[in-house]
Image 1 (cartoon, rainbow, N blue to C red):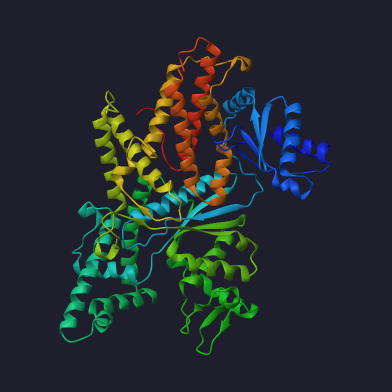
Image 2: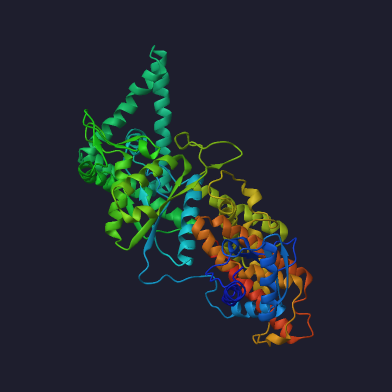
Length: 592
């Protein structure tokens, strides 16, 4: 929980008066539930300066604090831990402070602070966004919001993979089988039109491979010599040479895809401050190859290829330029990173939201950038995440077995509608209001289910399980916010109270403690690049509130002060829930 600076100051005074030592920092933590106490002081760091047993130091500190700090009413020492018991007034004052802090838990960036770029999404323009992209987008967007709430300036960006053989496959299939299809004359989103032809290419390619095998070729030979593949490779060469007809088709089909992506991003509630395109960046890094050669970061081999030897760093040799002078992905990423610093001179670090299959790539990239001597290269982070699995198995874009992002969003909304109707949650609402809430619940369920899991872990996604109105789910948390909103609407506008007239029961005290944890949780989530820490904090907070709601009569008090305090406590809880949900990209309905 957030600790009043007075406690830190008093601990410093106590150590100076008792042991004649000056300590700047004390390790403090919430007391474990199986021990009496509210706050625990870890004694072990003090042993470096004081020759005494942990129990003796703890006893002396506890006695001093109980004598000199009115709010400390008791203590106990367990091994090397001093557990302090606070008077109710401490928590009432802490709650009152939270009530009056408009941006509780949120830190505003200073004007001279370095900014952070967060890269996420980064799709290919040969297919629609799918379930895997959803996890990427939700993670990147949420981490960007959490970093900003923790006091960082943040720029959100993506690099769109709009060139290469996979793009040409869609283009060639459309040329051969499209019959002039467009998003306008089919009524389909542009990314779906293009994605359909990526699937069609694979179907035709497999037919040709099978035919070549029946003619006596080995499967490996057939895969390399299939005519449709050779045609796609030729189209790529034409694109790279600037063939006008191919480039125009490429521009047209990419524009279809970009419009489709934007519609999905809008549905998903994510956005970007800037866009980079691989077609514009893939040559950027080549200009730094000569610089790397002259500085000794890179070496040229006999065949003309250029490499970076990372064996002394525990890695291997990495090629950065082929013998024919063409760049590789590593070259491009080096150039793009450097270009971003030119575009945003106040950048002090970058976060790359990319699946864990690219862990090694980013280790190499970051190490090469450090060898170039860039100071900002010490503040690069790969937000590595596990894949999203389905009960039906692994997804494959080229075979058309992916879970389309738009379809999943629509399915989540439909499932939320079905469950809400069965429970009678929105009886009496206008149809337009119902549809809005169904969408909020469906998206909230999807986002929370994905974000509550540590990014490094794989997810087995179950849409129906995610929309349960009970348990650790988005709808459960959203419903609690709606319940609190109803309490605040019911209360009178005048909610002032006298601090001295407030008494606390255990559930009220526990709820205040949980509220006090919010600022530190935001900071911890930012440091760990993990929305899961915030999501699971939210679940604990909501459980604390519901425990109070079910056992304490908020409007049944004889004391108007106590009622006003409980309403304010409920309101503060609702604001923290809404703020935390917002950092996860989730809406908080006022009514459900």
